Image (cartoon, rainbow, N blue to C red; front, side):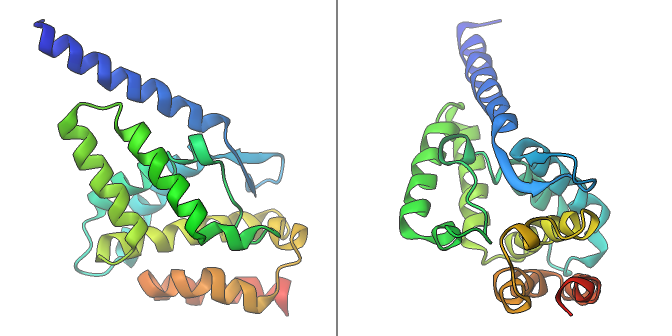
Length: 198
């Protein structure tokens, strides 16, 4: 192995070891059985599986392999920033300028651990997910919103109960994002939520 190859491998493993820290970031959402809060590493893995299994709900222009990549890396910034629950009292901070700026700094640091070519490619995917303008990113965002809804349905209301979420809040904060990229999913899921919101 040449020095260049060794340096590249050193950088790749530095990034992978840093990514392990995502398993220590707790989210508000619980596991489907309600036994404990999920961590962001579990969430990211589960979303990759969501994309694989629900690919038939993606639009014709969606590349599901790119979606899976986005979902595997989308929350790495939470290593530095933590998770801001969308329905919490601090939920407004979820999309605030301060949170976005902190996440961009985290992305610089975390993806910057990689060799330049990988850093550039993965950071571009992360930026694309955040912007939610391409078909791939819109579908990825839809799945990111639908997974916690399913966990809440399975756990007896989960964070909806904890944060006193209303049907209107669910629709504007979550439903509209799901419907944008996966309208049939939102139609099905919305019907399931009626038992909690009347």
